[in-house]
Image (spheres, rainbow, N blue to C red):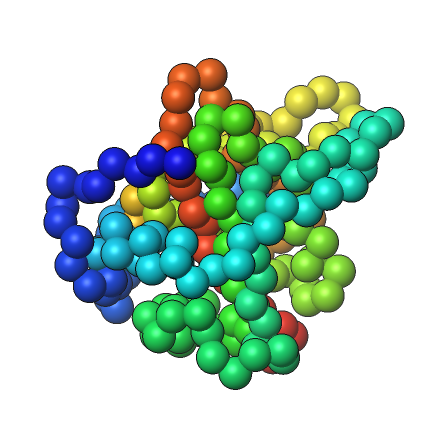
Length: 208
Ligand SMILES: O=C(O)CCC(=O)C(=O)O
């Protein structure tokens, strides 16, 4: 797996505490998303450090239509209940910055590695909605830019709206309100060759 270094150098990971580039869009009903392009600087180093320290595994036996398949990406999970320390100190700072801005206690971090264009995640909404009401899900994207798609939950009488964002190196993307009830999201496979992308997904418990 080869990742081309960014032209922006390899400074220490740092993020914009003011969220100056954030733009929030209301989706249907009670759903919203916030896109914060270039929120994280030093994303090269964060990518490399995470690749060194994470134990990324491929889940197997995932039900897909009528068969069981290997998940087409590698994942790793950190949860406050099981481990004191986040894998890297900067992730602790990011958690608290997200907690400050979105008013939720982000207690878990999921890491998803899309090794190349063949890796993907299919249409779904997060089951986390069954644990907390209207969860806020924050996705920090590092590595190759990949399209992140959203579509309205299939409704009777035809297709709903669909939207696509290109999530690039250091971009933050946040889904909130009723997104996990009213919308689904996916990272599709691509036709053209694609370098690795790591998504770092922050979820929270029921505490405010
Ligand atoms: O990788 C992403 O950007 C999305 C990840 C995701 O939807 C998930 O793991 O549930």
